[in-house]
Image 1 (tube, rainbow, N blue to C red):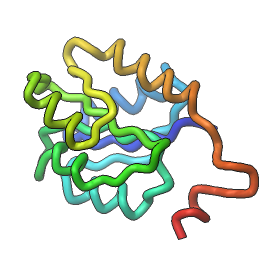
Image 2: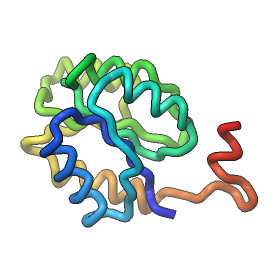
Image 3: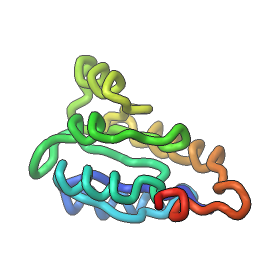
Image 4: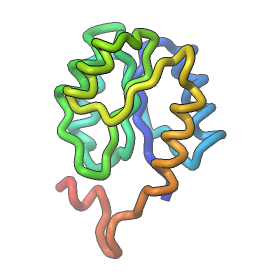
Length: 138
């Protein structure tokens, strides 16, 4: 099963490029996206078992990605990855403390980001036989 990625990004050009690049370079499926904090929190929580990796930008059209990270309660197998143009050491520390699993600079760490996603996909396991994520969510 492909790694299911949800993108939290408000720039439509970056969103399109990122979705295409991830699906081309890694064994992933981008299952949705949002550009605001509220929309991201609602979707990710309503579909709690439908995503494997949430890729979160920090600056959004409404709200911010740090609040999205704080709002989530991921399972042990789900990952939260920050991909931002605001890679200060303080912001990295805040995001990691809030629950992010990884933090990447959009302008200098795209190779590292895609490697991380590729490796997550390689370690990704399907749910146990006879179980599905949708059944677990009910």
